[in-house]
Image (cartoon, rainbow, N blue to C red):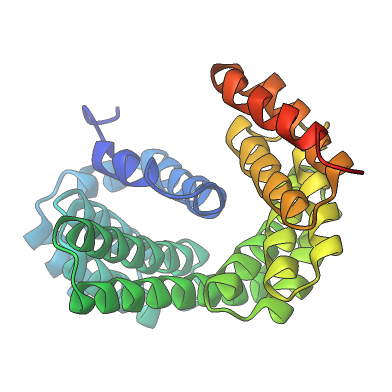
Length: 285
């Protein structure tokens, strides 16, 4: 039987991550919990032990992966970040072939980096300073490097998980390595469920490299992709990116196309979009 409110803190943490993080993290955490819930009676007894007893059990049976997973779960529920990582590091050291432990450790490193970045971002927002900004940027760089490492390692083990190419490309974008990011995003692009997200990120990279017409095309693919339908947030972001670039390039027809769609998907802003549309239509062709 599941304990009450189990993993509520993990769910709260996961609700803060980006779409790509959710794709990478959530299924893996769910699979670990399913494994713990389906253990034998002895496994269920272990799950009820206090963490001190689990620590002792790990010392006496270091090759058993289950106590590491259960103890890490207890520590993460208590926000004991260092202890969680310590236990997972030890688990992987003694059980390097246990995919559950390896993936849980990878996920936790990434989630820890994201928490650090969010804390730094709040600190900078509350008390802006050069020092706080440098700290925020440092945390963002660490987050990108940790995500890159997760995607690289996991793809080496599971080359069919092309969603990791999307995460790899996103990390390289953050690090400013746009040419390399494009290579990975193009590998994800043929997958229908990934194409809209990959196209938006491709457009961002192409625009950063000065490939403006290619970027405009990528934004259009992301904004008008039909099956499967992208999220509303992704559609709006793609439309806004395409509109801004079309206006910058003075491409009237393209700007009108993006604005017409924005009026359709964002009716609350229809008046402001309509006024902008009328201004664009008056521009010389």
